[in-house]
Picture 1 (tube, one colour):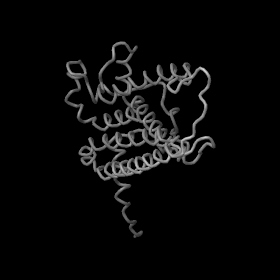
Picture 2 (cartoon, helix red, strand yellow):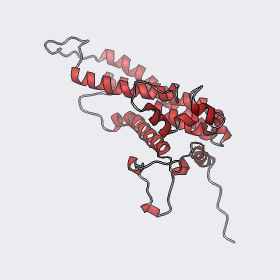
Picture 3 (cartoon, helix red, strand yellow):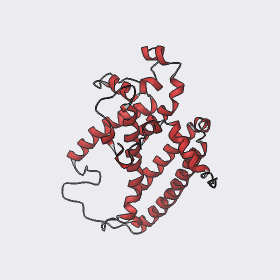
Picture 4 (cartoon, helix red, strand yellow):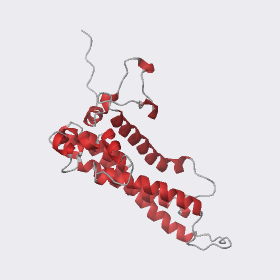
Length: 250
């Protein structure tokens, strides 16, 4: 008889349970080895059916990309520090503070779903993520407070360009573009996070988007047709709701 392999560490078992909890394993395919259809957003097929659930795959792909972008923007200044920006002067304080707030928000979402994760044998992974994010947030907060004190001691004044004041907008074009695009995306993300399944009337085809991504299944609006037809089954899709809210939060 071949020797029995030792069981995998508990944390890796919990990681696998997390993938089952969010039903991400439904999209995994390695039947053709490296030729299997994996990859990024290109894996989302143009034709969606109840069987392939491309809307659910879209939620998980975008959520993963957003999570990668969020955590990478904390690492990038450490690895690629520009010559005209310095930690001790406080140039990276906004990055630290937004990263700290983001960490606490993600940890809070995991804490809200901790009982559901435990029910899926993924509680250890959820707890570990909460602890790691909170530890990193505390470290970033401590450094931000320290760098702020050093920045006041090493403050370097530079002449303000002509026609500008300390409160002037750097670029009106950038301000308007970011304000419109990010404001619109923030509105959709806030809806998906705090009011999943709620249809925003002035957004074209918003009901189709919610149906495609499965929001009307895991969070059917009260009094709607979906609530009457699928309201009793909605708790069975708690993993899909968690994946959707995590994508919106990131």
